[in-house]
Image 1 (cartoon, rainbow, N blue to C red):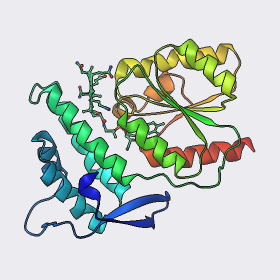
Image 2 (image 1 turned 90 degrees about the horizontal axis):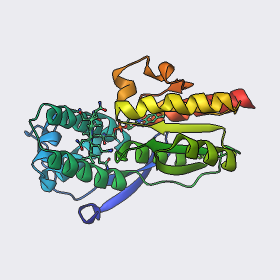
Image 3 (image 1 turned 135 degrees about the horizontal axis):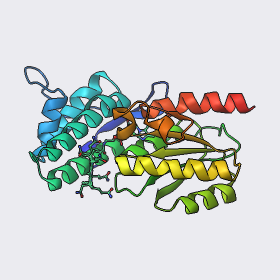
Image 4 (image 1 turned 60 degrees about the vertical axis):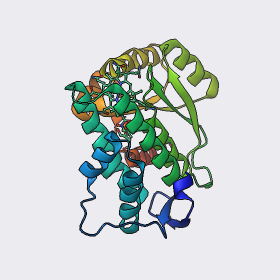
Length: 242
Ligand code: B12
C-alpha cells in the first residue's frame, strides 16, 4: 500500500466501487508497451516498480474493475498455464498472486450502502487456498449493497448445510478454482435437494469458464463469468422471490 499513498478517491462506475486514481506517480507509458503481457512479465520477475507503473498507467484511463478483468485475471490464468507446462515455478505463481492481491486490496474499497437483501447471502470456496476470486466477488457484492456472510473455505458439505440452515440463507455463492472442488458442489446440491431446502446455488471460477455445462452437471442454479455477473443474477433472483 505504501506505493499507493499519493491517491485520490473517485466515486465512479456502476458497481459503486471506489476506484483509486493515481496522481503524481511517475508513469511513463509513452513508447513503452504496458499491456497485460508486460504486466505478467513484471509479476513473474517480482518487479514491483514495473507492476505499479502499469497499474498507474491503466488507472489513468480506466477503472479498477477493468484492471482486474483485463490484466489480473488474464495474467494469472496465463501464469497458471505456464506452471502447468513447467515453465514457471509454484513460488512464482504464489508471489504473483500476492502482488495481485495487494493491488486488489488497494483498488477495491467497499462502500457502505443501504442493504438490499433481507436474508443474508453466503459466499464460500471449497477446499482451496485460492482466495482472490472470492475476495473480489465479496467486495463487488458488498459495494452494491448486499448483506453477505463469508464462510471462508469449507471442506465438509454437511458443515455448509448446517451453517446455511442456522443463518437462514436462501442464496449461496460458491467460488472454485480447481476441478475436483467444482465436482464437490454436486454433493451439496443433492443434500439441499434431499432436505427440500430452497437454497439457490450460484457458482463461478475457472473450471466453469473452461466447461460451459459444468454448472448444470453439479446441480447449480446458475453460473457467472465475472464478479459483476453476481449482481445481475442475484438482483434477478431477489425480484423473482419478491
Ligand atoms: C494464484 C494461484 C495459486 C495460489 C493461490 C493464492 C491465493 N491466495 O489465492 C497458490 C500458489 C497458493 C496456488 C496453489 C495451488 N494451485 Co493454483 N492457481 C493459481 C492461479 C495461477 C491463479 C488463480 C487466481 O487467483 N486467479 C485470479 C482470480 C481473480 O480469478 P478467479 O478466481 O477466476 O475469479 C474471477 C472470476 O472467475 C470470477 N469469479 C470467481 N468466483 C466466482 C464466483 C461466482 C459465483 C461468479 C459469478 C464469478 C466468480 O470473478 C473473479 C474476478 O473476475 C490459477 C490459474 C487459473 N487458471 O486460474 C492456478 C490453479 C487454479 N491452481 C492449480 C493448482 C493445481 C494448484 C495446486 C494444487 C498446486 C500444488 N501442486 O500445490 C495448489 C492447490 C492449493 C489448494 N488446495 O488450494 C490449477 C488447478 C487445476 C485444476 N484442474 O483443478 C490451476 C488452474 C493452474 C493450472 N493451470 O494448472 N495456486
